[in-house]
Image (cartoon, rainbow, N blue to C red):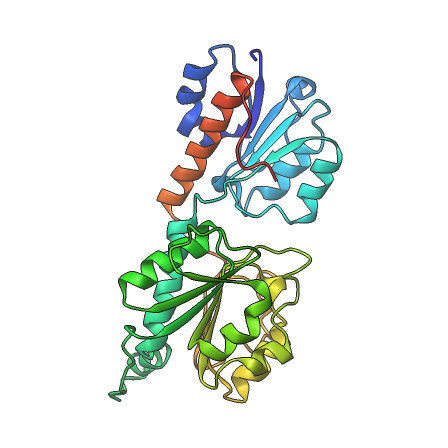
Length: 317
């Protein structure tokens, strides 16, 4: 296939335009410059769009406002792994193919999970407060070897977390809908969640948002976790009942949490999660690294080659 017109940001085109033109020398581009809505007369001809990492979050509104005015769009590639937001549903409803960047940010997000585990095991929230106040208060830490980690969701992120955790000597059991046999750790099916909660010293949620996972971690599920266990969420905020989580932390039933995603973002200023002494809040940034951005662009370039050659695209959602 040739004669394509791509809609993308100016930064994206500067980054990978040469690679795309090498695949299809006839490729044309309509660029989003800054955050202004595009009004080019070529919009009617655009058939490909790439929602690249540099557009999120600051230029997302301008990007998707323009995108919804592309009458002949055939395919949208997004840098993100998740495509559960309503905007993607609207696009799919128009018969447009949506492909994701699944796996591109997995190593970076897995590193953040390990950061949370290390920080909680070394009392980093309290130590940071002590440093700011000039307080010298040594604490006994927890070594990670022998820690029992349950991973809910063994997609690309969960698999990478399991691999890194094993390198730290952590005992890992993963949970997924069906066991394939090629997982890097002991793996159970989702119906065994109560067993996992009773076993684990820490739970890491790396699952996508689906009908099955929405609201999965509620008051009853948190009550089934071991007293003092840590809770980590790098999946989707809507998987967690945040009121129940805050209550479980406040009562001392849970020992701490590392949270990168929330039901409402930015996390409201009045959320008790901000002020809990053993909660680490990061602003949905666990996958925001240069290497993750580069890998997501590589996925798009590979898919563009497939699109140009009439081959099956990968990561269709």
